[in-house]
Image 1 (cartoon, one colour):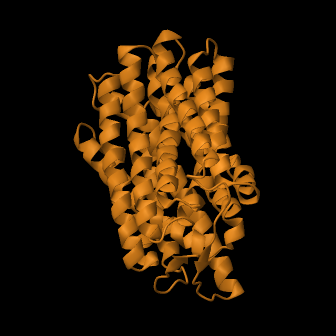
Image 2 (image 1 turned 90 degrees about the vertical axis):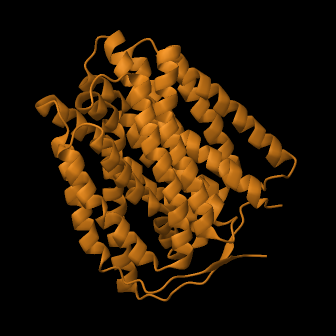
Length: 393
C-alpha cells in the first residue's frame, strides 16, 4: 500500500531533522570556540567538507532511491544522521570533529533527492503537500539553532549533538517497522503527468535558468543560515546561545509556515509569477541586512527567509513537471548538488570576509546582487499557465 499520511509524516520529520542536524554546528561552534581556544574562522572551516557532501551525496542517493526504494533510503538517512551526530558529540580533537561533521553532511544529503519525490508521488494536491513538508523544514532550521543553543547552555555541547542523534536512530528503526508491516510502501510509486510541450531550445533555456536560480538561492540561504549566529552576536550584543538560537528559531518557524502558503499558491496560480516575485523581493531585504543592526535586523531576516522559503514548492513542482519521473531522484539530486554544494563556497566567503573585515556586510551585498541578477533571468523562463498532476491508480 502507499499510505499518503505516513509518507508525508515521515518525510516531514526527516525534513525537520535533516535541517536541524545541518544547523547544529553554527551555534555549537560559538561554545567550542571558547572551550578549545580556536578562532571562529578556523572552526567554521571544519564544516566545509560536510557542506560539500550535502550536495555531492544527493545524486548517488537519488539514483539509489530511483533504482531501489525511497522509503528504504530514508531509513538509511535517519540512522546515519543519528550515528554521525553522536560521533560529533564524542569528538575530542579538530580532526575527529572534522571527520564526524563530514559524515553528518553525507547522510544529510539523502533527504532532498529522496524525500521530495517521495512526497510528490504520494500526494494529490502536490503544492499543499510540499507546503506542509516545507513547514517542517523551517521548523528544523529554526529549532536546530534553538535546540543546540539550549542543550549547550543547560548541559554541554557534546550532548547537544548526542541526544538528537539518539532520537533520529529510534525514528529510523520505527520507519523500518512500518515498512515491514506494510504501513508504508517499500516500492516506489509514480504519477500521471500532464506536461506542456516545449521545444529542445526551450528546455535548454529552462534548464540553464533553473540551474542559475537554484545555485543563487542555495548560496544565499547558506550565507544567511551559517553567518546569522555570529551576525547576531556582533550586531545585537549581550546575547547568549539560547537567545541567539531563539531568534533564529523565530525566523525559520515563520518562514516555514509561509512555505505552506507558497504551496497553496503553487496549486492555484502561475508558477513563473510566484517564482519571480519571491526571488525579487529578497533583493531589498538583503540590502537592508547588509547594514542594519539591532532588533530591526531580525525583522529583515524574517522577511528574507519568508520570501526564500515560500517559493520552494513552486521550484520543486517546476522541476518535477519538466523531467522524466523515473529519474526524479537523480534530477532532484542535481538540484541539491547546486543548492547544498554551494555550502563550501559559503563557508569560504564567510571565513574570508570575517577574517578581513570582522563583519558580514559584503556577504549580504553578494546575496542582494545575486537576487537581482536571477530575477532578470527568470523573466525569460518560457513557461505559460499552470499544470495539474494526478495520482496514478
